[in-house]
Amino acid sequence: MSVNASSRTQLKTNLLQQIQQLDQQEALRPSSHPEIDQLIYQLEGLNPISQPLHETHRPTLLGTWQLVYASRGTVVTRRIEENLPLPVEIRRLWQRLTASPQDNTPIAAENGVVLTLPLMGEITAIAQGSWQPYEEAESANVSFSAFSLQPTRFLGVNGFNLPKLTLSVLDFFRREALWITPYLDDDLRLGRGATGNLFVFRRETLL
Image 1 (tube, rainbow, N blue to C red):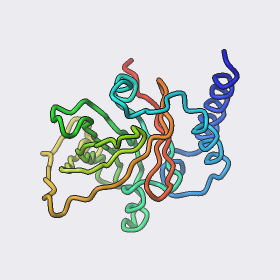
Image 2: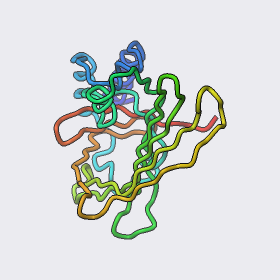
Image 3: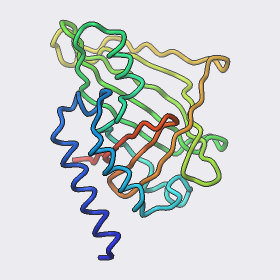
Image 4: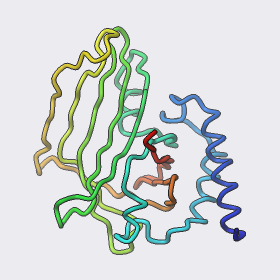
């Protein structure tokens, strides 16, 4: 094992251990953890794949990734903090990347979250969109075209699924954002938003 590979393995271990010590709600909501952020910066410098969004690396990039840390929260968790007075538990946050059937949008993206609402149950929210990688194959232009909401556990009853509500986003209202992938390997992916927000994803595996 090379020095870089050994250092990368140790940094990954330290990073994931520190994240696991956090409560899941704290890890995904806006909070300050400079020691974790520093480990992310160091790991980015040891990225084993220099162009993670290049088509040759799609087998490594594509799949379902669980979000385990967000340095400044996410769009969903920030809105929960700002707009909902009731305690809402984040059960799961994920990002699923697949090959898009459309030639002009090579990567299809699904961002999903499962929330537990007091006295009601669980609700699943999913945003469907696409990634358009830039030439340097590290960053992409991201946009979302549809959103869906569905109660998936109602009043404590599992399997009691109410109809899914899906809303398409008109082109006029569609927003685009820069997304950077500074690190990718077989089971860990780091992301960075346009404002510097740091994200840590772990690959979900089928049991």
